[in-house]
Length: 299
Image 1 (cartoon, rainbow, N blue to C red):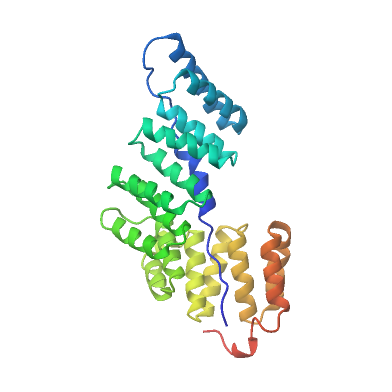
Image 2 (cartoon, helix red, strand yellow):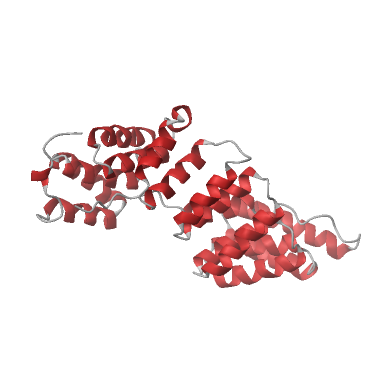
C-alpha cells in the first residue's frame, strides 16, 4: 500500500513571515528638508495601516513616501511587502528588487524577495536570494532556519537536510527546527533517522504539534502503527484544528480498520477543508486503496 500521509505546509508559513520581518522604519532622514519629514510621516502612517490589516491603504502611503524619498531602500521594502500581502506579487517583486539595489545588505529584504519569487514560481531566483541571506549573516540562527525551511518549500528536502545539518554545527536545536528537519527526512524516506532525531530530544518535541505529526508519519511508514497513533493523537491534542494531522489520523484509522474514526475526521474536514475531506472520502469508500486484510495486529 502507498501511504498518502501529509506534512505541515511550509509556503504559507514562509509568506506569513513577510509581515514579521519586513523593514520597520524608513531609516534616518537624508537631510532636514520638509520632503524627508513628510516621507517619514507617511511611513509611520503606512506601518500603522499595515498593523491594522489595511494593506491597500498602506500601499498608497508607502507609494507616496517613495515618491518623496526615492533613494530610501526600506520604504521600497515595505511597499513590496504590502503589495505582496495583497497578492500583487509581480509588483511586489519589482519594489523589492529596487530595494535591494538601494539596501544591498538588508537580510530581511533578500529573504522576503526570495519568498515572493517562490509565489511567482521563480525558484532559481528564490534560491539565489536565500543564499544571499546566509552570505550576509552566516552565523545567524534565525536566518538559517528561514533558509532551511525555504528549501523544503522549494521541494528540495535533500538540500534542506544539508542546510539543517550545517546549521547544527553552530546553533542549538529548537523544537520547530527539529520538526522541520524531521519533515525533510521523512520526505526523503529516511524515516528511521527522523524517529531517532525526534526521540532523542523529547523535551523539545513532546509539545510541538508538527514534531509529533512527523513522528507519527515516520512510525506509520515503518509499520509501527501503535506508536504512530500515539504521536498523531498527541499532535491533535496540541493543535486540534490542524487539517494535515486530521488527514493523517483518518488514513491511519483506516489502516487499523477503524472506519468510524476515519469518518469522524472526514466530518471535521468537510467543514474546514473540503479538498482534503474528498480525499478522505475516497479512501474510506475505495476498496482498492486500503487492504485491511493485511493489517493483522498493531505493531
